[in-house]
Length: 218
Image (cartoon, rainbow, N blue to C red):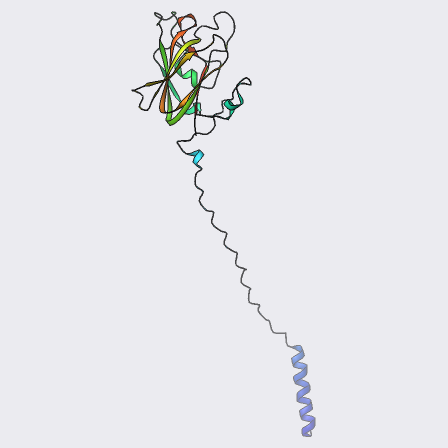
C-alpha cells in the first residue's frame, strides 16, 4: 500500500473511533451562595420620661360625664399600686375596698353589729407606692340606693400628706355635699408617698368610701 493511502486509512480509523467515544463529563463547580446582607441591629430604646417610676401612666379610672374637662386630662396613680389601711373598719368593709376599682364594694367604719361603734374622726390612709407631686384627691361615696345608702358619707374632711408614713402635714380641708356624687379636692402640688383622708363629720356618725383616686402633677 502506498504511503498516501496508509495515511488516509489511519485518519479514517481515528475519526471513527473518536466519534464512538463518550463525551467527557464536565463537573460544574457549585456557585457560592449569595451573601445575605446583615440586618442592622436594633438600637436600644430609652424609656420615655413619662414611663419612669416617678411618672405614672394614666389610671383606667374614668371620670364621670359631669366632671370638668380639665379633670379628664389629669394623670392618676393606678389603683393597682395603691394600698389602703384605716384607723378602723367594719368586717367585710375593709379599707382595701376603696382602691379596688369596684364601686359596689366600700370601706366603712364599724356600725355596731360586731362590737361597739367607733366615733369620728376616723381616717383612711393611702400608700401611693412611690413619691409623687400629688395635686388632687377624688372621693366617691357609696353608690347603693335605698334606706341607709347615705350612711358614712363624709361631710367634713381633712387631707394630710406624708413622705414616710409617720409624719403627716395637713394640706387641705373642707366640706362635701351629702349625696352620691363624686367629690374632688384640689391643692397645690405636694411631694408625698402617703395621703390620709380624715372624716371629721359624716352622715350617721360613720365614715365610708366606695373609691379613692389620687392625681399627680407632671
